[in-house]
Image 1 (cartoon, rainbow, N blue to C red):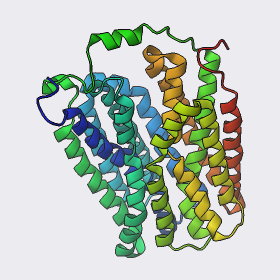
Image 2 (image 1 turned 90 degrees about the vertical axis):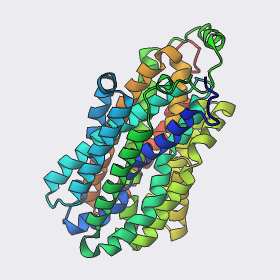
Image 3 (image 1 turned 30 degrees about the horizontal axis):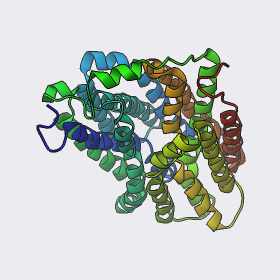
Image 4 (image 1 turned 90 degrees about the horizontal axis):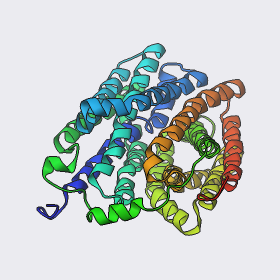
Amino acid sequence: MSSRTPIHYGWHIVWTGTFCIFASLGLARFSLGMILPAMGQGLALSYSEMGLIGTANFTGYLFAVLFCGALVDRLGYRRLITLALFLIGTTLILIGQSSSFAAILLLYGLTGMGSGAANVPMVSLISHWFDKSQRGRATGFVVIGSGFAILLSGKLIPLLNRLGGAEGWRLSWLVLGAVILAIALLCLAILRNNPAEKGLLPYGEQGEGQEKRGDQFAEPEITARDIGHLGGLYFLFGYTYVIYATFIVTTLIKEHGFSEAAAGNFWSLVGLLSLLSGPVFGTLSDKIGRQKTLALVFIIQTISYLLAALTLPRPFLFLSIGCFGIVAWSIPSIMAALVGDYAGPRKAARIFGIVTFIFALGQIAGPAVAGILAEQSQSFRSSFLMAAAFASAGALLALALRRPGRKA
């Protein structure tokens, strides 16, 4: 059944999923750092208000994550993802027409809800279309959509801001919203809820034997302490990386004298480097162990944040962004594998949902606290120093993980 066409339809789900993540996370979330400087100046926003905009987005994302399972049961993957992308596109267009901080806060919170309602089901849909022996590779191609969006936004948004003049940031939001609405139509046309709708089996499925052999392995025992340990690690990642992603462009422009175009080139470099982060460090975790790899990633992030915080020559800023980019999406992939190691396949989805909820709390807190610190000190240096301290704690916490399969 799966050989009716030269290319299994699952791979069409994958490339469409890449566009979905490109839109729902990449354009909707990671473009904010590029737009914030011009929008903040145009609307006379304080640093704390700029931080709250990011927090509103993550709050909406967290809220949506709680209800994704029920929404998928009611609407199905295809319809939910399409509606979520339409919500994102519409709210971004409305932000481009807004002048009220309160309205932007509400709208960007709704954008976050759309991001959660598109991202989580899209990643979950891959498990329906691919056998477990192929899911990691397929999901890896899907998640690089965020990297492509960062790469694009670093070049596109400065251009749009220039074309739009004094309020070019409005044009940026309008264009991003229109692109996301187009991708919503693409998802409606291509996505399907399961292989049966196309008369296919999941890609890579080799029959019942393999599945049964996989189920014969003893389920590992995961304790509440393990869940708290994993959740703490994921919280530290969410708390720290989002500070850097939200405020590094603003820092380059306002504190280091970069032009918007030059700062955009830096941000594009992050996107380019991040395309390798998941596959490289995921493979490394298979070879040297997930705890050591996770600690290594946190150490590299600590270096990145310290270099951004200290008053150093400009080449060190290139090094800071390089360090951030090469590990950008590595921790989510390692954490997903770690949860599988600890919980086993049957419990992995439920446990990963718990630690992702904790991760989202970190994303909410990070920009708000960083914005308040920057407001008090009139610089983001203290915020990046805080991020460095938290990331170094993550490295130590990673090394303290017990090996899966051993008694706690």
